[in-house]
Image (cartoon, rainbow, N blue to C red; front, side, top):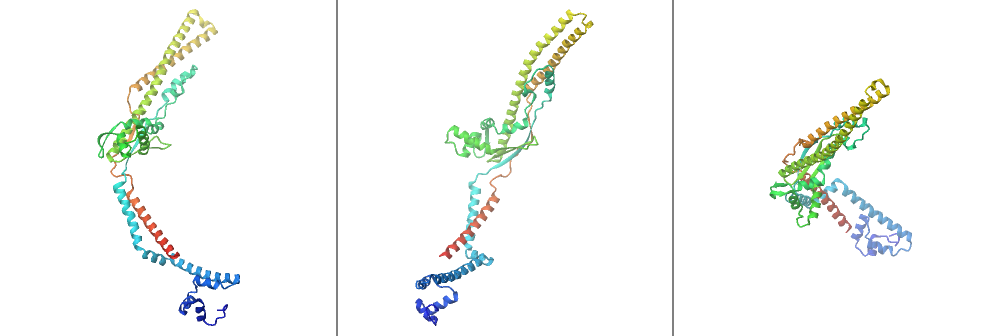
Length: 387
């Protein structure tokens, strides 16, 4: 009105070609539609005045926008928006929950878990100390691996995880409710993985990776106790599977021990033959010395020589006794079939599945559906406002 020199509002309404009621609404709302502002801007030649008018209008728009946003983030505003979209807020989480339950009960594979606690027997090198001491006295070297027994409690987890054990267990037969009795473990796992149409090598490769997931070995650093976790698709099958793993791993460990004992016995046998020859030489040397020097006790030099020959014979005989003792013990260990593992806690038949965790998964997906529905509701509100 100042720019055009108008004295009454109806003149402004006439200028914008609108009714007086519409102009009154602009005044009350403190907002002018953009298309009418353009008409007014086009008649301004002063850029500063244009900028001032535009800033005033933008400030009015921003204030209105901020006011609406504050209303939306208030508790009453949130409740109002959610209540307006109550159908979506209920329908989407319900759909997520039903879909999750259908998947968990009818589609997802059920996995059972059984646990066994095992104590592998540790080797001891105490019996070899005497042999090593006697050998050191006469300057004879002994193989290092004979003086340091393998720590079987540390090697047992490696045996359970070995490829050799996997190949042995895969040839065992099991009885299952799903596939019947007399089925090879290899065939059972191949059917579970649905890989029967693949080549033999590819099947073995995938089955081996699957066994790494089904057999978990845990051992603490400061304890010899080994915890064995075994997973399966049926309770009875899982327990039987764990029993076979324990059985075969014990046999393998015993086989490695027997092989070590065989090497030890062979070494002792060879050394006994060599020491017998040395004993005979020492006896012959002492006998010849005494025959040639019947009155050696009258000469200090001959006395020392006789003592050295006697000492050599005593050492050789002592070493012979030690070697024969160790040889006999190795022969006994070689033929005995004592178990090298003690099962502290036998694998049990699980009475409930280990996974999937149905309650937890259902709760998670229900809340996920709720949050997604809230996001969709606010996205719709934003798009509606933009329009």
